Image (tube, rainbow, N blue to C red):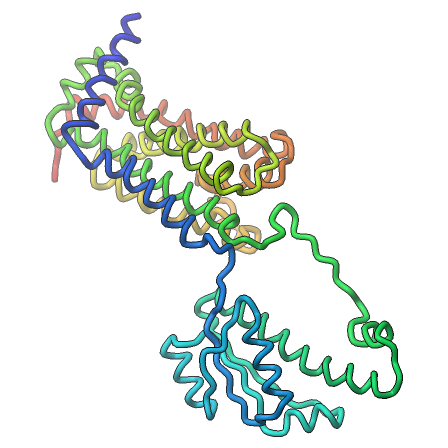
Amino acid sequence: MKTLRQIINIAGRECRILITRNPIYFVCMVCLPIFVVVFFTSLMDEGQPVELPVGVVDQDNTATTRQMIRTLDSFQTSKVVAQYPNMQEARVAMQRGEIYAFLLLPKGTTAKLMSSKQPKISFYYNGVVMLAGNTTFKDLKVISTLGSAKVGATKLSAIGKTEREIKAFLQPINIDLHMINNPWANYNVYLSTTMIPGLLMLFIFLITPYSIGTELKFGQAREWMYLAGNKPHVAIAGKMLPQTLVSLMVFWGFEFYIYYVLGFPHPGGPLPIILLGLLAVLSAQCFGIFIFGLMPSLRMSMSVCSLWAMVSFSVAGATFPLFAMDAPIQALSWLFPLRHYYMIYQVNIFNGYPLSYAWIYWACLAAFLILPVFVMKNIRRAMLEYQYIP
């Protein structure tokens, strides 16, 4: 009972700090997370980029090439915003960022198509912006294929071939594509479910060592430890309790918003969603405590936590597959909570497989919770003996 009373007293003290003394807590724990959630989910609310600006250099200027241009403009993801007289002007426009790609139709394109020759149709796209470049590349490739297919269909029809025979000749293999759990290819589903949790964990990474380090900075460390009876685990538990509750409400609110308001696919059900949110918050807090215990310096601990959180986005595997990275990076990925969060999300929530399928990632994420045990003595010594050095 005495320990519980000490934890409650410290938690009450922490609530006063959160509410009245330092507005940075409210900003970093509530305002910025809400802004991040709204910003990223609304940024990609279309699911895919639409009407990306592209240009055309039509040196042939025939009915066939004009029809190809109209077809390109009718695509949902591309919009023909300009036609250029030569390739030089189109290239300059792409370098200026006015268009993401352009199609070059050289003189004689239609004549070569009609005479069964192979005209060289060129298209150029901006590979710096990966998503826009890949999307426009796909549309331009389709246009090039459709142009030759239309001429081929006209010729086959002229010699008496049926529609079924023409289709079999032009497209001998018919692809039946099924995108599991995300048939819309919605990039909001792919990216927001990993980017936003990573940013929420970043805020927790930073605010945890900050809240401990400011006890030294403002000369309140001995008072804090006195309330805990000089027991570091009690002091940490009392300090983290209000932060944990606030962060959990924000994280679960985010999950409720994307899964039950925006309707993101979650065939795994609510249980893994709730458990994953809990472990994500606790693992980020425990990692922050561990880093401060290793280096009881406000500046250094926050710097390391910030670096660790930023590297997490690269090794999580959401944007670039981890198995394609070097072996040392694959080994280091086990040290990042976001990597385990992403694997659990895609296995248990997005694909709906049983929890046992990702047991090793659940275990690794839970293992972060025991890290503070190894640095409690160091935190106690720092709070009672160290002097804050700016």
